[in-house]
Length: 244
Image 1 (cartoon, rainbow, N blue to C red):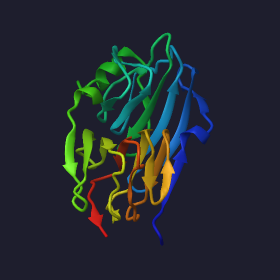
Image 2 (image 1 turned 135 degrees about the horizontal axis):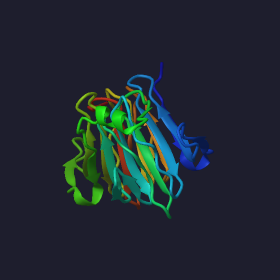
Image 3 (image 1 turned 180 degrees about the horizontal axis):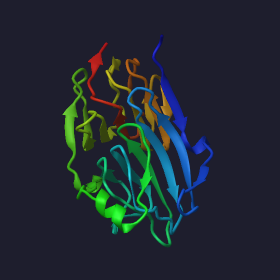
Image 4 (image 1 turned 90 degrees about the vertical axis):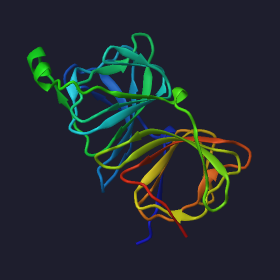
C-alpha cells in the first residue's frame, strides 16, 4: 500500500467546544493527528481568558507549545514559542491569564487521558515531585547542520527528545530555497507550519497547516524559493532518515 502524506489545515477546521468535566467551562479543540501506531495525539487547544483547569495528572508525557498569548502553569507564566513538557504523572493546573486568551498545540507521547485530583489529600498522594520541563525557543541556541546530499545548511532547536518512546519535537528553520532530497523515515512524523510556506512533494502549505507523513512515506520538502520556513517537526517515535 502506498504511504501518504496527510494535510490538515487548521484554518479550515471548526472548533469543537467542550466543557471540562469538573467546572463545565468551555474551551476549544481542533484534533489534528491521532496516530494509530504509537497513539501520539496532536491537538490545537484554545483557552478563553480566565480559563484554568482543575489540578490533574495524565498517564502519558505531553507538552503544550504556546502559539498565541500567555499561559499560566502551576503558578508561573509562560509566553509564545515556549514548550512546557509534563512528564507522565506530573501534577499540574494550567490555563489562560485573566484578561487574555491563549492557544497551544498539545502533543502527547502516547495515548492521552486525564485524571482530576478531587481534594488536597489526593493531590498530596499523587505529587511525586515531578516538575514540568520548560523549553523557551528564544533561549535555545541554533544547531546548524548540513544536508548530507546537497550540502545546504538548515537550523534546528531540539525542544524535546522523549526517553520512553524516542519521539522528538524540534523547532526548525529552512532557509529560502532549501529542499531535501527524496527520502523516507522509519517513523511517522509531521510539520506544523509557523511562518512561511512548506514545500512538500510539489505543493505549498502555509501557516497553521499540519503536514503528516505516514511511516515509510516518500517525500521531499523544504522552504519556498523566496521565503524562510519556520515550523515544528514532530515524530511519533525514534527518528532516522534514508535517502532514495
